[in-house]
Image 1 (cartoon, rainbow, N blue to C red):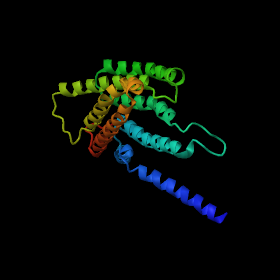
Image 2: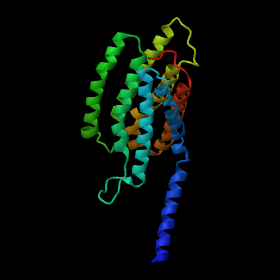
Image 3: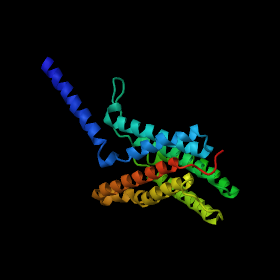
Image 4: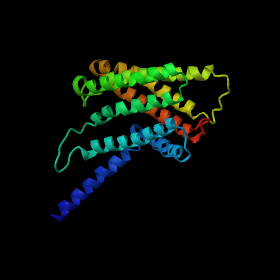
Length: 244
């Protein structure tokens, strides 16, 4: 009995060690810049940056929580003494698409000067929420990648960022990148959402016709995540020119 118990402890330790080791793999490397950007962004509250930056900081902090929850779910939280669910954590990531989109769009709403564009952004939010909820529960369902929602979100956010960059180009003042936190956030957002849009547009086709291609594309997605969160980290190491 004692020997068997020792074996169980050793097996549990090996499983735990392998899981911790996997966090150091390329698949999870994006967690490092994500965590750092979230921690540094907390200064936006202490230094009383404008509400848009504080909202974006809240998004980064929430993203860290969601990632930890999703990984923990896959590693064993899905099963407990009183529950036994699917180990798939897609339902977590799919559900997070809505708050992530809302916070991102509202951030660019906060740095947008055009009242007409602001109205369009606000009107798009309830339509996006309704579509995403219907897709989540009735069309693609929680345990499949909600590509329809991702493609719609990416498309809206790409257009939102491009409109912001047009505003920047049209400005007569010289932009100081050391103080242009919003520029770094916009750049990180544009790089990731533009880079992953073709992937999610073709996701279902790839799964059906050429599934081995999915893995290298996921590696590209991880790399874009690293770049995006690194640019977000840069943003919160800067000092924004406008604080409210």
